[in-house]
Length: 76
View 1 (cartoon, rainbow, N blue to C red):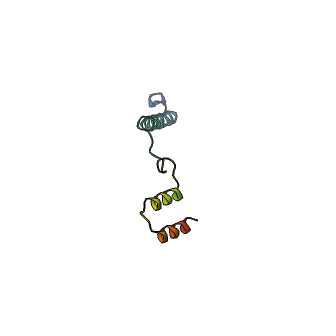
View 2 (cartoon, rainbow, N blue to C red):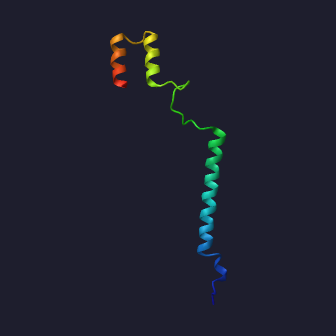
View 3 (cartoon, rainbow, N blue to C red):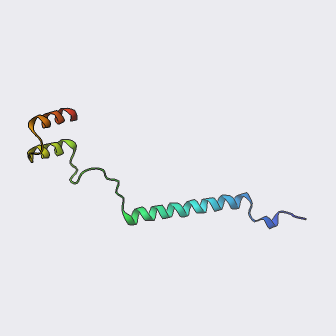
C-alpha cells in the first residue's frame, strides 16, 4: 500500500527544481556579462553624433558641398 511518502516532495519539489535551474542560468548569464563586458554601446567613440560625423567628413574632403548640404538637410 502506498501512502505517498516514497514519492519525494511532489509538486513542491518540481517548483524548487525549476527555481534552482532558473537561478543557475541567471547566475551564469550574469557572470558572462560581467566578466566579458557588454558591447551594447552603439555610439561612435567620443560620443559623436551624425552631424559631427558629417562635418568631419566634409572637412576631410570626402564630400562635395552639394553632398554635404543634401545630407545635412536629411538630418534635420
